[in-house]
Length: 95
Image (tube, rainbow, N blue to C red; front, side, top):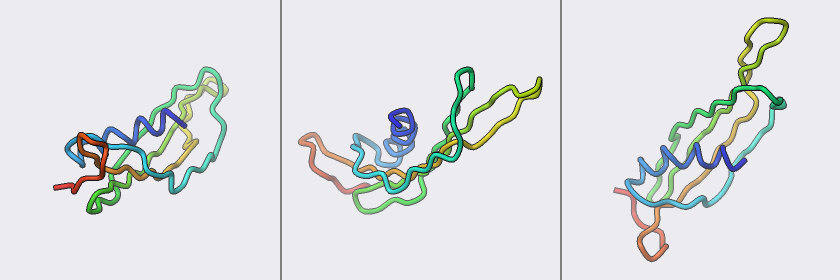
């Protein structure tokens, strides 16, 4: 879960043009397990920007070798809300 939060924070920080904090996890669904040996990739996109917040959807895929064949499967989806903060740690307007 922490890796998903880190992946989501990157586009959130870019959209907010500065420091952000994780405010909430709106949704987090584990669709399939991740196994030892899987190659895991996270893809994050901003889906909404508010006055002080940024919502990001993160999709997590695992690439695995099954029967000599490489398969890519969606293993987790999450929507995370971040809030832009100022130097005092207070919410700030996103411009």
